[in-house]
Length: 65
Image (cartoon, rainbow, N blue to C red; front, side):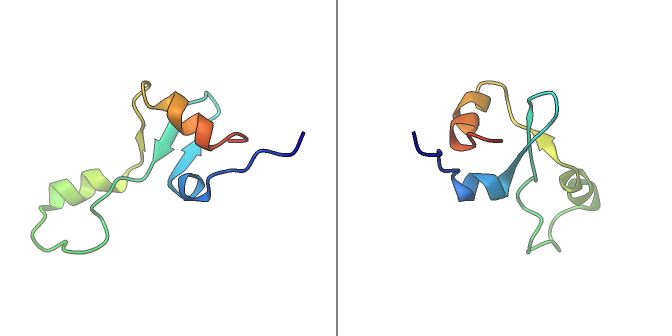
């Protein structure tokens, strides 16, 4: 049986943690930052964890993740 292909778009957006959770970088940090408050930008810095209902869908896109 051939190897399964990874969806590269998903591989660039999501990373798996050792415990099986999926983390991602929050959106809204690239441009148009002047109108965003310092608190909002500070909270966008840190990675977040995907909701558990979405994890099976992402794991299907990342078979070796």
